[in-house]
Image (cartoon, rainbow, N blue to C red; front, side):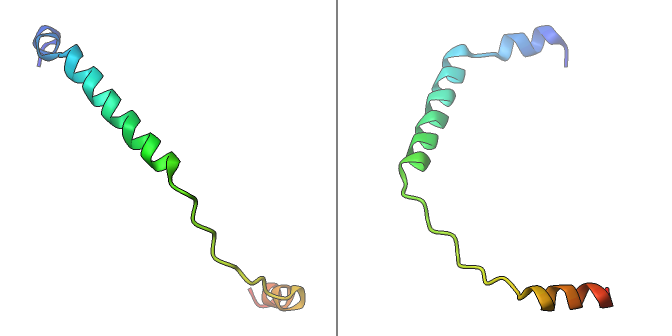
Length: 55
């Protein structure tokens, strides 16, 4: 497709509408309260080190 054909299809009003819609989605995501991260139990240091010996 030639550059002139691409240029003819550009619509700045549609681009602005799409940008505003995307901004609204981002605001909606930012306004949500964060979900707490699940608790991760860390293995004991000696178990971790013994696992390195067999690796």
